[in-house]
Length: 549
Image 1: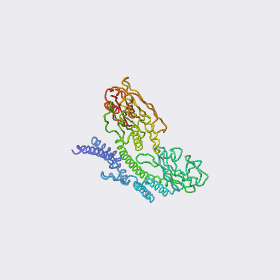
Image 2: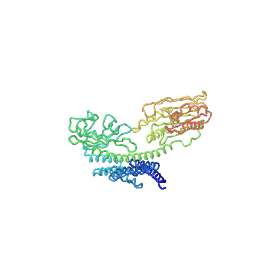
Image 3: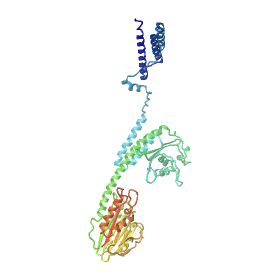
Image 4: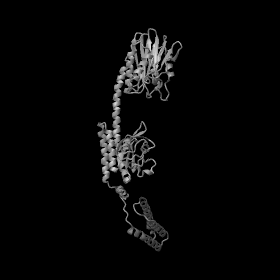
């Protein structure tokens, strides 16, 4: 009976062998232990032997297959017993093990000279902060950077050149030691050490056709151990002090902007070992600290200059605003409208209304070239002259000519002004005017229903002392309108880059010619603001409307 059911444990052995096969497959996938194909083969033999013996009872066949299976495990066990040990990390230690398996990191020993470079670089930054309270602080900073770089690299001479972004020039700002010029000397310069060094100390170079400008333009540091092999270097022989040794040129950038603001240049004389990679690296390291120091000094200088300009502009703007008429009184026979819009700071436009005499009301429209205190000075001078002279019986042209000679006679005044002077006699409805520069005078002729230019083109005042300005006279009719404006009004731009134009101005005037001058000026103001929208004002805008009633 026991032999009859002996096939049951044989099938159990087969099932267990299959389960073991599944487990070692999982072990192999997770790589938690080494798994050989021998294990799979042995398990397959056990499964086959169990099933075959259960269906074909034969202990001899089953025993032989078990013996064969045991023999298969002998080489596998020998490999595991005597092979190289392998450690498998636990999950919590996996990160540590990964680190241990990485290639060993070789940490470079910090050398004494590098510590010295850092200390010297820190000194640059400290000196930059000290320069804020000293008017010569920037020069002291540049000289310190130059001398430190010469000392560290054992150079015979050095220079720092700064870029002038407005004139595309690079100018020597600091110079020390022996620095054979790597550029062609002027032909009329004597080849004497003092003359050559003095010439270089105050030299300016374009940003091309010389090594300084090319390094600044390219923004690439250069180590030139043999200048004769570099076509950018010119040698001014035969004098010994002009013979070239080796050079280092390093651009100085404004950190954060990647803009080259200068060049550090170092030289060694011939007969001395040329600069090598070590000196080149030291110079670049110091240049990095120098860039941070220069950024600090330059930014602070720009900030203080901006603050001074803002303060100056506020003072000047207050003065200028005090010159504008606060409120126009009623004038006999006319209605006056004005509109003015200024850019920030001191503007260049101003108007004035001067009730000089019973038979003369003087209207002045002025556009001074430039902005700032100099413009304000010229503006104030001209206004003062007019307020004195219009009380005389002189004509508008004569008054402009006198004011022009007065401005041209000022030795320190280099500004000029476009101007229009309109004298109106309300007793006779007579208009007398004279203009100079870009400020025109137009007349809306009620009889024709058209706007026509009545002024003539002439030089601004302040250009030529002998200029004579012409008088233009006519009798106005009731309903006529005299219009005077500065070019910033008709040249105002909208978002599409289109100008407001004279046509737009005259259309408003013709369409509203029956209204008083004040209302017409307000309509122009509304129309131009609608046209410009949110665009930034590029030039001052001023309008004067005189309606004859």
